[in-house]
Amino acid sequence: MPDHPSARRPLKTRSSGLAIALARLLTRWRISPNAISVASLAFASIGALVMLAAVPDGPPGLRAALLVTAAACIQLRLLCNLLDGMVAVEGGLGTRTGAVFNELPDRLADPLLIVPAGYLTGVAWGPELAWSAGLLALLTANIRLLGASLGLPQDFQGPMAKPHRMAALTVGLLIAALCTPLSLDGPVLLITLILLLIGTGLTAIRRTRTLLRDLGSP
Image: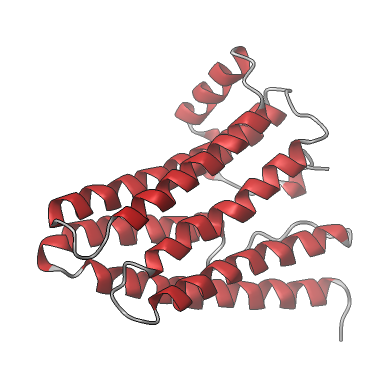
């Protein structure tokens, strides 16, 4: 069940005063968890469009502003991911369709936010690198859900689980924004994507090994 403790990602931010206050406010306003989940996808879409607008040959000031806006959209997406579960579980507004709305927007949001960065790297193979990182992000989630479908607790281990991926991309975008006057934003995003690719690949391997071990594979 989506509200089972093992199905929820362990997050320290869930117990923060701000998160609790926002969740209570949304619950009081009867904002459905599903609507919050859809909002997370909306923020991811805006972030993707903003990144694509930050073309390498544009004015540095505009590029920097767009990259910072994209970083903000990532954090708003994560905030929605946090609040939808809190409103559903702690707020008691969960529904049977909640698991669908909880998972599907996430599967779309990850590649939406990762792939556009590849087109800003300034190298010919940047898009392929970003697509690879985006597909690996989907793979890690699929491994987690596969374990759950087999009756195992959901595996949220990293080193590049969703919160880590989004944190790395946020930091990469902010550093890239600072480096736009030197035209180094492309190399910064390239390094960010390489780290995402390696970290997400290791995450997929670790989760697969854990899954096989828990199933009793020799």
